[in-house]
Image (cartoon, rainbow, N blue to C red):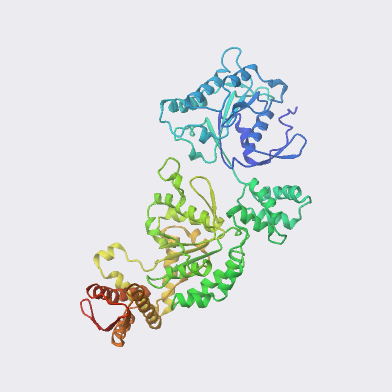
Length: 629
């Protein structure tokens, strides 16, 4: 014979089925995850309704024959939520008396403990309750104390734990011969770690149930419902696909907001994706498709080649990635790539060849002359605990309220260039963060908020292939210099072997050294090795550096700096004599041979406005010895 419970429509979401089952398995239920969303629930007439978590829990308990579904709400306090529908579970007057006794919204630890003990005592004695009741605490992380510091706090958590061990058993309504827990406590919070450490989450008495965000099928059903409601017409198949695809990772409430927003935008093939972008990151216009960016990209190769000398391959690769980003084709080969970052580059090569300068040039190209990349020096993230700097400290730790440096930066400026310098120096567990960023285009910070990277351009730089072990450095202080010269010689004599060396080191690092081949796969074909600059590029770097020094002298001292031909020849010879340090080596040369002696000269003999300072010659003794006029 079928019972009313057996005839109930099938529950559509896994967490609902798990709650329904768990009501007879554990006296404490802890619901986490997507607990503030709307969920589809079948009504008695077969129509699907959208209910919040409390309403769903009420329906599940009422279908089970619970005599009362109670709530401890921060606004209304302790009260009943809805009436029992089962005639055999008519609410006992003692429940009404308990509600009157504890009515009000102000519940400290002592009062909460009194309430829980009173609920438990209702089942004691010969005339105790024989039908189950449930109490839901919808904001458990806010209602319970943050830590068991005070005596009353410790007493409350001890009572909660004891209730899990001494929960009364009563006959299960609608199920003859079965028993269930008389008192079920349902705790609701977004993240389990928001609860105080004293909360008894371990053991058989607490069953943790995680609510997930809607999957593709669920978002398609929601899209049909919301399009019909907002546009007063049945959704076309392409509209369903567009909404469901554009809202990947969003809640049901956000899917509804996307459709409502789309109704306010000009009609077009991208109206739903534009609306979803607004919901995610707060911008309706695609920052990569505007006329300004497109105009800049038209001359991108020339501009980047001017900024980063002697790197035609890296510049061409960068322009390809930027072009894909501008036309929205990044990751188009994958159906799951809709929300991935707009562009990704992994730049490898020796120090001083222009990796960081290329990142700065890309930022200027996209965002304007004053813009700078959001830079993270990954040598500062060598230990696992330093990931807290990126996503925020967990609850209870110093810095929790401040959030993470990475998540804060992207939340503040969704369309930005992120530069992760010397990525190989970061702890391998921190690198796992990039798996989610590169694959799903989002990251959850320590406070449970979701940050989207779909409008970001991400650049990694690395010196993989140039490192010298600590032992080699100890045995040979010149090991790093010697290796740089060997790589330069290899680059000049056999460029293919040079590029193969760095590619092999890159693959070995991810596949063997840190055992993260999946991260290398996420980077895809966005890897590029930068070569050493040649003599022509070195001379141009030298000329620009000298011009920059002259401009500084003119701006600060109102004097003119002239580098004579003899001094210039000496500097050129020194610049091209050792290209192993790349452009940085040339800049270091100008600092030691020109800037330092010039600073001493200006300190000893200040020049008047309009004076000319001529560097006649330079002699590379133990230190550079200049001749001034």
